[in-house]
Each structure stands twice: as C-alpha cells, then as structure tokens.
Image (cartoon, rainbow, N blue to C red):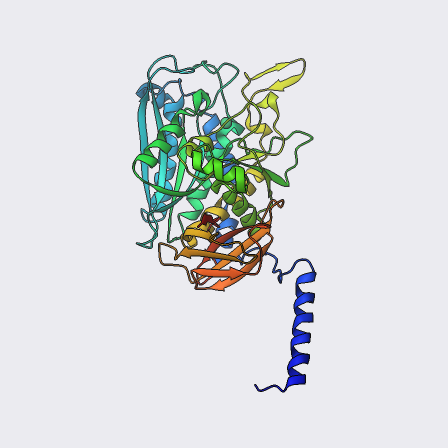
Length: 465
Ligand SMILES: [Zn+2]
C-alpha cells in the first residue's frame, strides 16, 4: 500500500494512539480465561459405572477380616479362616484377577512383597505385600508413561502394635482401597494410550513401609510415573460438620527432592507453588470441573495435615508428582481407636460411619483424572523461558511431547499471587511462542493436547540464558 505524506502522518498518529490504548489498560494483552476441558463421552460413561453399592460391599468385605494390621496373621491357616492381613491381601488380589477376567485378561495382577526389617513400629521381621494391577497403555510410544492410584489396605486400632484386636479400618483406609479397586473395575473396560496402575499398599500405619518400597522400586527401575493419587480417609465420615460437597487434595509446595540449585532458583524467582505435585493437584481440580463428579476438589497447599503423613510422601521422596485425597472433616473418634462405647460415645472405624455415595464420588474424581491423563499426550519436554536479555516480552521454547501424540500446545499463565491458571493461549503445533507479557509479572506453563482435546499436565519453564 502506498501512502502520501499526510495520510502517513495520520496513520502513524492513529497507530501510536491505538498502541497507547492497548498498553494503558490492564491487562495489556488479550486474556482468554482458562476453561474446563471438553468431557470425553467414553470417560463420562465410565464414571457412571462407579457404584456406591460395590464400594460398600468391598469395604464391608475388608472389615470382615477382623484386623488388617500389618503385624497381624498371614499364615495359611489364618488365611483359610478369613482373618488377618494375609486374607485381605489374597482377597484384593482375587478381586483384581476377577476384573481382569471380565476384560479378557487386560490387567496384569502383581505383588511387590518384601521382608521389612525391625523398625520403629515393626518389632520383628515382617513380610509386607503391595498388590497392584497394571492396565497397560495401548500406544507403543506412550505405554511407558504411568499414572497411578493408591490406597493402603492395612489398618490399626488404638495401639499400632496390636496384631490381634479388632481394627476394622472402614474409612482408614478401606475407603482408599475401595477407590483403587473400583477405578480398576471400571477403567479396565476401556483402552488408554498410557498405562494406569491400580495399587493397594500395606505398612502405612507402621511407617509408610509398603509405599516406600514400591516408590523406591519404581525409581530404581526407571518407571516414568507422571501422577500418583493417594486416597486415604475418603469415607466422608457421617459427622454433623462434614461437608460432602468437597474432598481435600493435599500437595507439597517446595519438593522434598529439590536440589540446592532448585532451592536457589525458587528463592530468587519464586516457584514455591509450582511443584509437579501442585500441577497435578490443579489438574485434579480441572478434571472435577470437567466431569462434575459430585464432589469438588478443595486444593490444600501443604504436604499433609498437621501431625499426619501418608503414602503420597513416599512417591514425593522419589521425585514423583503425588497428591493426597482426604475427606473434609475427620472424626478422630472413628480412626486409630479401639472399637468401644465410652460415656455413650462410639469409637472405632466402622462401616456405619462411612458415606458410600461420597466414596463413589471421590472415586469418580480419581477415575476422571486417571483417564484424562492416560488419554492425553505426554507433557512437553525441555520447557524453557528465554532470559538472555532484558525485555518485556516473553519467549517460551519446548520440545515436542516425547510420545508423538500432541497435535497442539497451549501456553497458560496466571498472576504470581493466583492459586490456579487464569489464562490460555492456543499456539498450535509449535515448539516456541512469544507473548507480549513480561515474565516478571506472571507464571507461565505449557501443556500438550491431542486431537480430541485431552490435556497433558502443564510444565512450568526453567529459565534459559
Ligand atoms: Zn490412613
């Protein structure tokens, strides 16, 4: 286009004015709010299959073994008599095998068994067995990617060392065990590009022994676990102050495995709210919004409750992203207590205090998260933000998703003081994006999408000079 002098002047003035207008408003860049992802009809249908009645039957079955204390009986006679942790182990294994039979052998049912040397709450060498079912990913490039759900099937009463007395453990953690089982039953009817592992561990109450062994094995064998969902006390105890509309999701901030270099970077640039576990927690919240599971994830930005711990920490210690689901309000009369009535108050972790509809809804949030992640492409790799020069734009670079399933990428960002992603820019099938936003003012991340809109976990960039 040719312009004469006065038209050029007018053009330049109007260009300057429009630029001033564009950059004088806040925000200075068109903001597209992040929205919940599209629901996958196959996943929605699977969530409908999750049954509160099945969950009730499974929790009652676990309770029927009398005790599942890690130190309780596991000899053949006790197993035959249906008493002790050995029976619980055999029953869980047979349930996984039954689900596998129903899906034409789609699950590989395995045990991870070891002898725990005497420790704090283990008076003598004790065999601890984790049981898990593997739904292998159907895509050869994605099958090494793993998402995992876990609960602990051991229980306890008032005395951690009481191997004989009743320890029903309906809520702690029959509920979490039932979530792993029900997710396995329902999701094994589908196929996913990536692998899902349904795990139940023992030794939690003695010192996280089972999960520690499993997570160390995974690390030693180089398992690429992208996400661990630990369900512990998700029974929705029927106390008057319970809020059954939410489930708490705990996640660590600064990772336990952070190196000195990581800590230096976090001290100077922030990132204490951007561990991989926290990205996973946000992903859980998003899955909850997409699939309307009947219970809303309430993100708690701390590793765990005061004075308490759980199996997700064993995975965090090995550098894996892991979060913990727990009901909103715990009733301490109904956990870690001998079954009894004192002054008219009932103590003990009995099935009658468990809200099975609530457990089913928590299982739906878990299944939605597992299925979404196992359907999504691998997260983009080598995500960096260029910091060579002082500039007010931000340039991000990354490598394509390693499993080759991404068809596009999105850049997410939020204010540094905001808890969750606020804005998104679709950048297509690119490995670089430049945004007219200062990296000093926001936190960025990049995620990958497949052709159907399944989203990967977002990856926060590392600075690159
Ligand atoms: Zn527990």
